[in-house]
Length: 301
Image 1 (cartoon, rainbow, N blue to C red):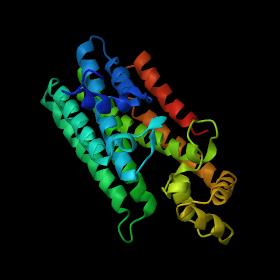
Image 2: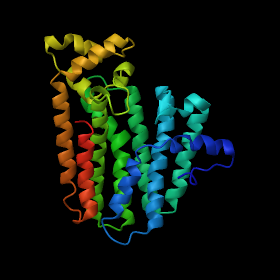
Image 3: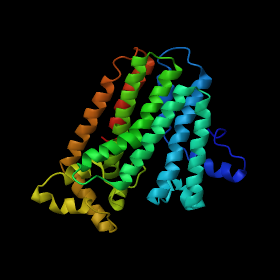
Image 4: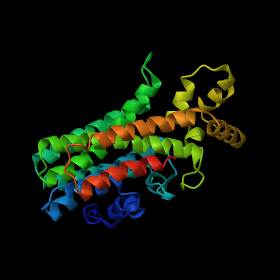
């Protein structure tokens, strides 16, 4: 990845490598590798290129997201926009998209088309998130559509790339797409719960509450009308700058049945994802994909 992101100057190389060097889960390239092992004989070079494409595309989107969110930190380090300014961060995000496109072109036109379609969904998801729900649109439905585009689409493409380099049958590649999209949504929804429920995940609890970012449990709460929840609904309906209000909101949500309801929805979606694995050939790779679905759910437990 570092070589693929290398620029013509040391400065571009340093900025482009900033978030790559910071680590991350590498969830998307892992999916490429797992799916590529469903059938024997996948060319390791093509597997590597496909994995690089999806991670570079993901990291490029993070450079842009951090500018839009005015973020100060990413992956435990200062964000690129904080260190180098918004203009440079945006341009380096564009540069990484270009490097991903150059890499994917070596795999073939069907890979280029999939990456381009996925990129379009990423952008449309970001636009929809920025604009917010249309008048009369269900906020929860809007939110789920946004994360399907912003998160699910690239995870689906990752699983598809793995199947494609393994020359899997069309029905298996389609099953991988459905699995990847669903597990991508589950992945994001589990993050929603971690922001509220976990003190040990490495993520500061209440970050989304402070920023007024809608999440699955807060949207489910806002959809209710129980008078007893009026104060809690007020807290989660707006950004919280006061530490005492953040603590009050966290305590209220942790004690509220909406958390169990949100976990049940995550488990339901994970079960759907597992069902999509049915057409895949039995073996260690399929077992690992099934276990991956379990692990994503367990993150929010």
